[in-house]
Every structure is written in C-alpha cells, then in structure tokens.
Length: 440
Length: 135
Image (cartoon, rainbow over all chains, first blue to last red; front, top):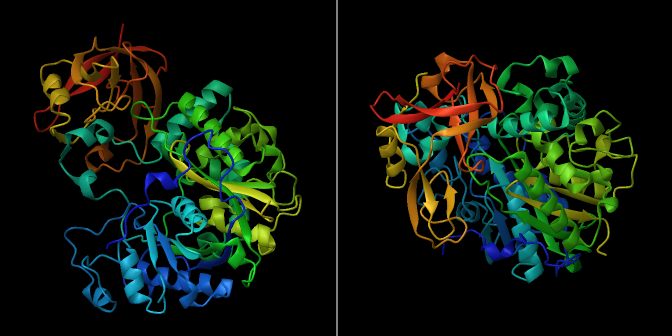
C-alpha cells in the first residue's frame, strides 16, 4: 500500500492536552546532510533522490545504526522550492532510468515517495512503517516523534529534501498564463509575491509598535554570521560572505517592506535524522537528544491574509501548547531556533514564546541587544534559512547539535545548551519540537 | 494594470458573475450569519451550514499594503512597482479584498482611508472588483 499522510490525530494541535504522554521517551541521535547546491545540474548524483539517499545513509552512520536496524521512515514527499518540472520540457530519462522507478517518472526528480527510497535503498530491509509528514521537516519530526512514542517504529529515519530547477521560481505555471482559474484568482490576480503576506504583517507591526525596517539588520547580520559557521549550509559552502547593515538596508525591494534579504535563497539539499526510543537511543553512537514535546498550529486566517491580531493570538497559543506539553516555561529555554524564512516573522514566533521575557512589539528592540551565540540570549544560533539557505532543516539540526555538544564554531557559549525549541514555518500553521539534554 | 484574465470555476462563479453585473457579492453562512471570503464549499465555522451569496455595499477601508517591485506574474511585470493594498469591508472588517488602488502612486497609499468598489474589465471580458479612494 502506498504511503499516506499522517492522520491528524498524530499532531498535538490543541491547548489543554497536558504533558505529552511520550515526554522524554523519544530521542534524536543521528544527523545526515547532503551537500547543498543552488540548482539541479541535471546529473544523476545530484538529483533530489540521490541527495536524499546520501543524507539518510549519513544519518544512520552518524548514529552508529546499521540499515537493518531501521524499522520506520517518515518523510515529506513534497520537494519543490516553488519550481515544478516545466510541462514543455522533456523528462530526464537518463537519470530516471538509472534508478529503480515507481509509477511516477518524476519521483526522485521533482518529488519523493517513501516507495522510491525503499526501492533504491535495498539495505533498508526491515522498514515496516512509512508515513508522510508534509510539507516541512517540522511536520515530519512531529509525526516521527509521535510514531516512535506510540510504538509504531523503534528506530526511525526522518527526511526532508528539496529540488530547485533552473529559472526563476513561481514564474512558471499559472503565473505565466493569460488567464487563471476563478477561485485562486481571488488571491493571486494582483501579483503579490510569496513574501507579501509576511511583509503585510511586518508593515502593520511597524505601524502599531513604531518600529522600522532597519531595526531588522542586527538579526539578519547575526543570522548570516551563524550560518557561516554551519558547514552543512549553502552560504558556508558556496558564498562565504558576511552581511552588513548597508547590504541589508540598501538591497532591492521585492514587496516593500520586504527586500531581497527578507527572502531566503532556494537551494537543493536533503537533511535526515535518526529517531529512536530513548531506550534504544542510549546505546547509539551519539548522545541522545530527548524530545519533551511536539506541538502544532493549524490556524488559518479569517480571510486573505493573517492580520497582526491573528498572528499574535496564534503565536501565543502555540507557545502555551509547546510549554504545556513539555512541562516547561519560557525561562527553561537555553536558546531558540524558530523559523525565519521569511525573517520578518521570526519576531512573531519569539514574542509569542515570550523568549527571555519579551512581549509583543519588543523583539526588534531585543534585536538591538546582544543576541549572539556568545551572549546570554542567543537568537537563531543555526543561522536559519537566512544564514544557510532554504531548507527548514538547519533549525532542528542546530538544536540537536548544540545539545549534543557538536555545534563546533557555532556552539552557544553564553548559556548551557539544555532545552531548546525549534519549528515553523508560519505563525499560523506550523509544527514545533522541544529538545532536551535529559529525558526529565 | 495588465491583469491576467479570469476563468470562473464552480465555487467562485457567483462572485465573478456578480462582478459582471457591477455588484460585489460575498459568500455567507446562513446558519452562522457569517461572511467568508474567499468562497469555500462549506462554512469554515460550522462546516454544515447552508451558504448564500450576499450583496455588499461596496464600501471599505484600506487596512494595509505592500509595494510590489518583483512580481511573479509575467503580465504585471511591466507595471512595477505597484501597490497591492488590502481592503477590509465596512460590513465586516474581517473580510479582506486585494486592490491595485488604480490612480494611487506607488507607496503613497493612505492606510485607513475610505474606499469604494469599482469594476475593471479584464482582457478576457471578465469584470473584477477594484477599489478607489472615496471623496
């Protein structure tokens, strides 16, 4: 039977659920990343399928687990950065045929199924449980956490991969047509780019709280700095360039008040983790990082785009879910790795969390203080999508690595890395994980 | 502005038909007496209410805006930069509509100003609700 999306019951999306029933009984151990590339070069070894296999094998190796010990696989089947295979382009049959195929020729090229992975990773001989957690790694982590806790799998690989094809993203398909379908036209006919929703919220935020776009600069500079210490990331591997306040402030607008740097750079990559029961994890090669809770936001806006009121209500609700299920408070967080692509909503996430006691409208002032990895209030030590490219993976990788003591030059030194939260993407509609050095 | 044409589908047909008659109609749940936009196949609140289409006054306020410099829609790229404003309806400020605010220079959008609906003909003959600043 083909792998299906996880049932809604696997997500903890309500307040009042109490402590997560599997708190501390599930752990992340292994991490695996493929190299990053800006776009696919068309070759077999850099296809999204190839990168995924590489990341999964690295995660097993990192954990010291043999493939036959793995009994679960949770992935996100969507791999697009916004680029879809052009209808008029011939399929890359030489690459497609070089792998074991499924019924869909674009499987492993512009999408990814669990079946394709299992056909092309014959060493995974004991996988009994497969599930999809679309569309971000954050979703897949929540599903994997719940699956391991529920006993559906004991040693589970979790994967998110991205393909990025030549050409400007979102400029093909309906956006290139002379006419579009009526229901989608109600949202898209005016030509607002993807960042516009967040830019609208940021504009309202600035008006309400008397803030300005340039106040984002310290956060952006800090994120790039941290990202340049993330060896797995795109900017580290391909463009080791620091970002200055001038670079940021004078960048061209995309949808003012969002400029070029207020958009993350689409890339190709795959990231994988190995999850296990805490009991199994304790004998693996790396230190287990225990999962205290996972939580989800399923809110949708009343109309076309979320208002600031809707954003603030939902981030506050999400924080209550995160803390309640983990049995912690904001004061317990050593650091935060909330999502940042788009960066103009990172402040919504951390204000909702009440990170370091900040309240609504205070995050941009907080950014003017020491938010570095060396200080007492580290913000986004992973560098996030801003510092490492669009993967929605770095935030989780960094949280695990920091707690395992494997973050290298990026290690937080102003705090002891004991409990962290990561997740996203959007303030309305996201998934979050609480990580801990200890199970209790 | 060189907008794309629109091909109404089953769900949105009443909205676009009304626009062709220079009327602004929004979907409403009779059970909840609650407007929803964009239209959906069921009420988002009660999930089983009977839906109707209600004519609006065509008056609203500018809630927010961005200025688009890098548009993904090819037909609009020659008009960059341009405003994309969010209008909230007087009948229910929670209901939003987008507008290019014809005649308002880019980045000179008066947030909070009163606006009223006008109807713009698209290249394929379909009317679309647009908005202008009220006197």
